Amino acid sequence: MRVYDFDKTIYDGDSTVHFFLFLLRRHPSLSRYLPAGALAFARFQWGDWSKTRFKERLYRLFQGVPNIDAEVHAFWQLHRDGIKAFYTAQQARDDVIISASPTFLLAPICAELGISHLLASKVDPETGAYEGENCWGAEKVRRFLEAGHQLSEMTDFYSDSLSDAPLAMRAQRAWFVTGERLSPWPDHPMGGEV
Image (cartoon, rainbow, N blue to C red):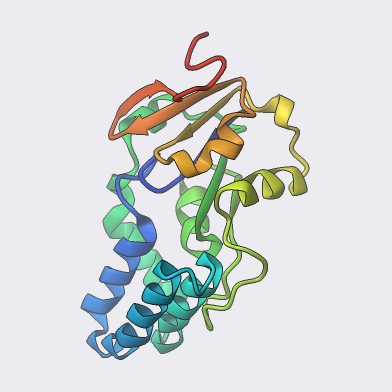
């Protein structure tokens, strides 16, 4: 079983950032949420707030979107070509995608690609409220196990971020993704060797 991060790993960019920009272009009135989002980011940077709390405040912007499902659909119609070629060339039926991005944002593109195993941050698309923690760092390991997967099943792990080391170090092989280039994960005991 291969396990992949999503943003900047199999998708060229950060899908949540791209979605925010997409929404702001289509609904300029959403800019009223930006000052609170900027303050939340500052609180996160200062160490006052957790990443989950910061993102939850930022995601309040979703409250101003009349039909979030329609917007997600329209977004992926324009951004589907952001899925990287290396991924589509090696995609397998049992792939697992694990991401900090909201489930409601990634579920439609995963369904379109035929990916049935998605683990992502559980965010209410109407309110921006989280159910649980942001699916990031060590939380990815917990979520992977909670979903009934075994770490021993993970033959390969792919990510663009060293914050995913808790999961990468438990894979048989781990790959660091830069654009379309795959390199052995730094300090992984098996690296990218077969």
